[in-house]
Image (cartoon, rainbow, N blue to C red; front, side):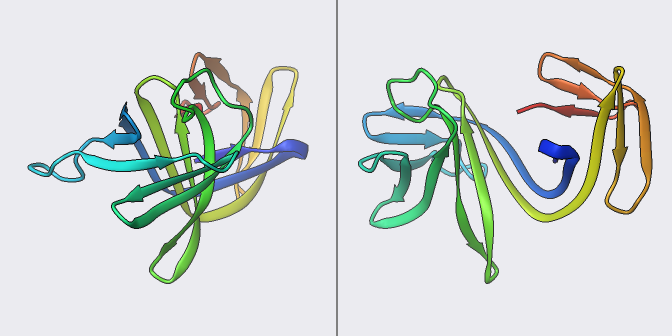
Length: 157
């Protein structure tokens, strides 16, 4: 994951990127099965506190997220970007979920973050990767796709 921030800060993040679908039935969000032959994953949506999304599996709180940015048009209240902490292997990690308000969901959880830098001058993108390597040249943004000067492509979210 490449995270372009203000003032030329680039975070290069390694981790889980899971594109998925979802649907909403009543107060439940339904995700595809976790494995072949498993039933769909059903979680109860809890939006009682403004700006907070809690997803419950039965009586167990599975995930608590806070809204970042504005909400999208969506009668279920899920549309938009949500961030929270998740424990894995004794480590607290940041989980991010993005719901498009229709049927698509993106789950991002970086395991490692390394800092680099970026600038754009006269249509050229210059990157300095965390290990010090440099990349510079023309880049393209077409719809949801970013193409770096060396031809590598990244989806934009």
